[in-house]
Length: 327
Image 1 (cartoon, rainbow, N blue to C red):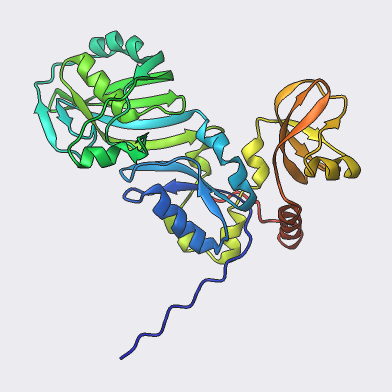
Image 2: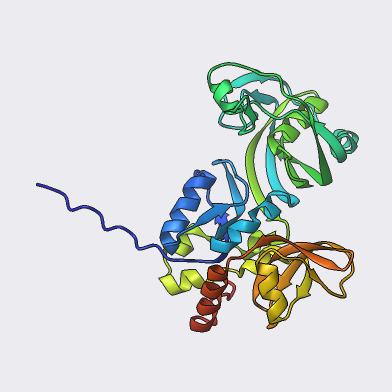
């Protein structure tokens, strides 16, 4: 008996940002491909990976929004984590093999003592089990082959660090962490380093990203909820592309200057210098792209194409509620 071939999904232009509460067990790319299929989107990208053992806020960009995904890569992050005390693993998390166990004797006073060591500007050595590349090859590939390579320490910033002991049978077994940090921070490494400073070692047993940039987990939709929706309901979960640029200064151009700006030309106007601006057409809601202002000129950066602008406008006219929040 022959099996009928699966019907190909008819892709379509989709533009916007979907805030997904990534479930455990999925890689960031696998979940991206799943949601891209659910939306039948032509083009998609994520804004930085979350490990399969991590859950939480994962902004997914579609269409024109992919042009601004780097902004979320650079954004500050907020995490909730559990750090198991007394056990070190090969990977720094629960996936690795146990390489050391030690007795735990940790008090709240010990947490108060080490907290300043891991607050503010600190240095971290990236873990071997990471996607950073050495000679064109990901570090985790070396690690899986049993090879350890030299890694330079990198400066990261821990803006806020809150730690609370988890007590079981009157003994400390773990630490609950709440962390606000800069891009490039490895929470696994932070947990390991705190464990070493406490003298007992530790590994990360749970990790949840609760915020990235201006996005919070309360704004996110789950995969389960998304799967249960109709196509129109899924599209209604998309935030406009402009939500990626919420912290940018707004510059508005008339029709003539908008057309010239979209062709890559600088435009002169009464604007103060600004490092990051979001540029809109005369209507005030038609996003043209980003740039910066210097010496009275707005200088193009990342631009939407005329086709993308037309598609977004058409979508807004046919589905005026398509940017409603979805939880």
